[in-house]
Image 1: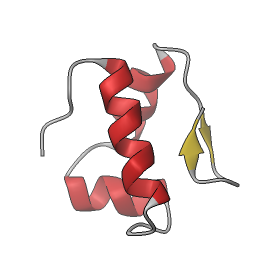
Image 2 (image 1 turned 90 degrees about the vertical axis):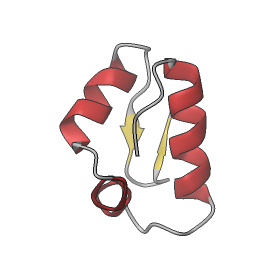
Image 3 (image 1 turned 60 degrees about the vertical axis):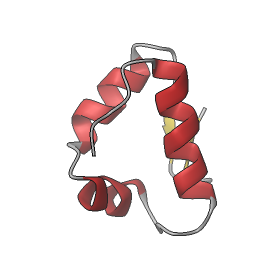
Image 4 (image 1 turned 60 degrees about the horizontal axis):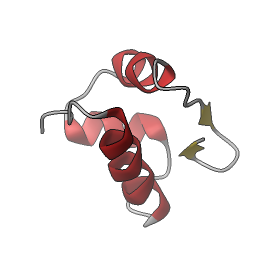
Length: 59
């Protein structure tokens, strides 16, 4: 799966997938999507989002 270019669409999509309970962690999601976790965090970080492991979401 290809990452959306728009950071807001990307964070919305990732948080929806994490929230729906299909994935127990960001690592699980990234593995399933074929994405590099560090790249995802950097991309969302550029938009001001940070991953919060305790809630399994970007905020």
